[in-house]
Image (cartoon, rainbow over all chains, first blue to last red; front, side):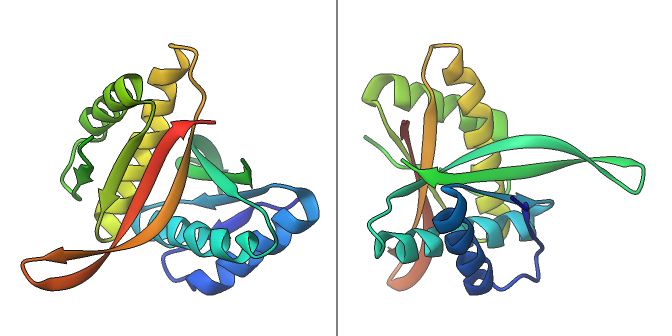
Length: 86
Length: 86
């Protein structure tokens, strides 16, 4: 299962569609964002994806946590949102 | 139960403490943020509060949704994060 990487420029509806698709297929999705603009787009996308998945009878929740990732040799703190049925 | 209002200038550890306190007392907390900077602080605070509450044996999740609020006669869209045990 690929992690859905979100940037400040990501379209929320596109990210929401990706989240809904991955949850339908794998019963969970992982969304990763670095920085305020990206985190904002990610959380809005989860709110929209909740609506999409509600139509399928799925009530999804999200679990935010910090993760340390390596970007070209530099350690960065990202926010990861795990989205899964309640 | 009061809504915990978060701004871009809110300290995440202070917001996390407030979330943990409200969840301990009321079994849920509602966090509200408007704008990317505020949403980022709110989500980071939830991630930190998860750690605090985990020490109490509580595994909390979060549910993001859009809400329309009235600020001095103007309609604004806020993001509300409901935090509650899984």
